[in-house]
Image (cartoon, rainbow, N blue to C red; front, side, top):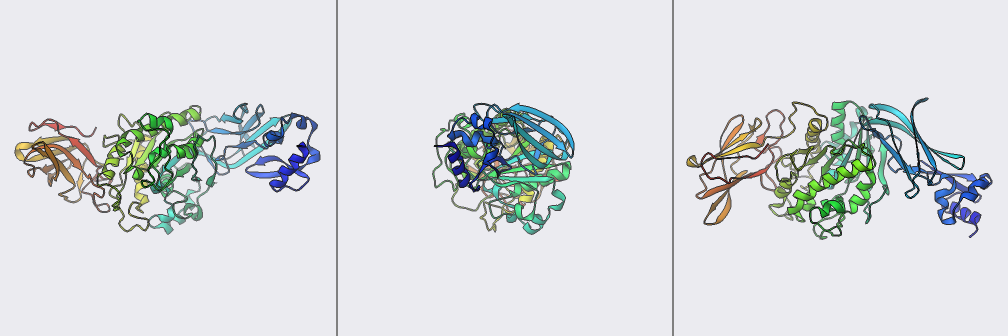
Length: 558
C-alpha cells in the first residue's frame, strides 16, 4: 500500500480531516498537522506501514496511563518513578518545574525491545504544585508531554473486593461525608477500571476516574463504582494526622477471590494451580486465577508507593478456605517484591500492608465456620499482626461492625468510617512509627487452667474493658471418650487485665479455648471485650491447651 494513502486513511479513521495526519498523543488528546510539514528525513526513518503509529512524529510517546494532572507522587525518602512509552532509541528528558523554576532534569532513552522509558526523580519533600514535563527527541524533532498540579506526598494503593469497592455514597451519613471535601483538596484520588487479563499487562487498560481532587460527584459515583469509601476515609484520616498530600489509588472488584489477585508465582508457593478457576457458584466476580493481578495490580508495579490497604476474604469462605493462611501472606510477599523491583528499589521492600479482618454476614450461603476460619487465616493463624509470617502488617478488626439492615446485604456493612479509623491507627503505628499508640484490641498473653477450681484464667497484655457479660462468646473444646465438642464457657470474674471463665460444664478434658468463633459474634459495637481508651475490640482467637496439669499456662499472644 502507498504510504501516504495509508496515513490519510488512518487519519480519517480517527477523525482528522482528509489532508491531515496525526503527529502526537498529548495527555490522551489527538492533534493534527498538514502533510506538507513532514520532513523528508522522517519519511526515510519509517520502518514500515505497520509501525507507522509507533514511529511517526512521536505518536506513541506518552506517559503511563496513571500519570496525569492532579496526581500525587511519592515523597522522600524515596524517589518517584516517572515512566511511559516512546520510540525505541529516542532520548527522553524529564523536567520537574515549579512555576518558572526548574527543580531537576533527568535524561534517559527508550528501551529498544519494550518501547518504554523510565526515570527516578530525586527525593522530594511533601508539597507542590509542580509540573512534570517529558520531552522525546528523535531525528532532531522534539515532542513534549506535560502534567500539571502535581503534588508530592504519600501514595497508598487500596484493593480487594466489594467492601473495598463500596463508594462514599453507600456509607452511613453519606450526604455529610460527600460534602466534606473542602479541607481535603490535597488528598487526590484515582480509581482503576475493572479489567481482567490472561497475561500480565505493562500498563492499565483504562481508569474509571483519572487523578482528581475530591468532589461529591467523584466520591459517590454510583454503587460499587468509585470512589472507595474505605480508601477515601482512610486517606482523610491520614491527612488529618500528617497534614501533607495523600494519593489514593483504588483497584478493587466485588465478588472476587484472593486467587484472582495473586500472581502465578504466589499461588504455586501455596500449592494452588496457576491456571485454575473458582467454581462459578462460589463468586460473583472474575473467577480465573491471576486475571486481576495481571490487569489491575501488575501495571502499577513501577509506581513508588508508601503502602497498601486490603479488604477481601468473603469470596474465599467456600473456596480454598484452608489455604488462606498461605495465599494471603504469599500475596503480600509477592506484591512487596514486585513493587520493590518494578520501582527500581524505590518502594520499600517490606512496605506497610494493612487489611480489614472480615465483618459479619447473615447469609445462609456460607458455612458456620467459614467466616471465623478466614478471620483467623487472615493473621496466618497467629490471631494478631504483625507476626513472624506477616511482618510490617496492621489489621482493623470489623466483626463488631455488623449491619442487619444494610440495603446492600448484611455482608456489606455501611459503617466504613470506623473501619477506616481503625485502619489508620495501624498505619500511624506501623507505617509512620508513632509511639505509645494503641492500634489493636486486647488479646490474652497467657491462659492458665485451674482445673481443680473449674476455671480458666486469661491474662491480657493490655487493659480490658468488659462492656457486657456474654456467656456464649467464649467456648471450650471438651473431650471425653475420644470425642470432643464445643461448649460455652461463661464469663466469671474480671479485672483490668484478667478474666476468668467457668469451665465446670465440661465433665471431660478441656483441650482448647476460642473467642468470637462465629459468623456473627455480636451486635453492632456490642462485643463483650474492648480496649478501654481506644474502643478497639478484642480480636477472635483459638488456643490449644496441651498440658492438662492444673496451673499450666498456654501462650496465645505476643
